[in-house]
Length: 138
Image (cartoon, rainbow, N blue to C red; front, side, top):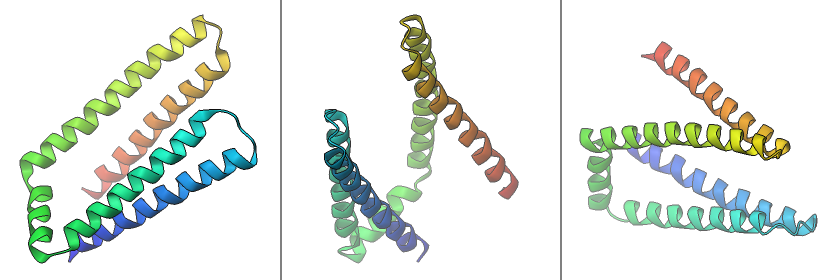
């Protein structure tokens, strides 16, 4: 039953992706933002949401599919690979963003460097808080 609850949460997140994507596209249109990034970003979120909803229905279509997916997700090797990939992605993002902040600062693109630096600091802060909470629960 716990796994079905996890899948439902993923379904709700997929719906949230679609809503955020639609909101991004609509707000870019309303504000007449000519930057194509917002439309592309919104469209990408919508596509991700649709794919995740499709996956949800494929997994929950039959009890056999549900059991296979649960086994895949509870396999220790897959969990280890997923955890290592997340850790590597986090570390790589922090390093590349730090380098980008330095380069942007040297190019005197201070506003973008400040925003990127702020996101790096926020991500590290979220990591520390998450680590502290998970450590207390364990």
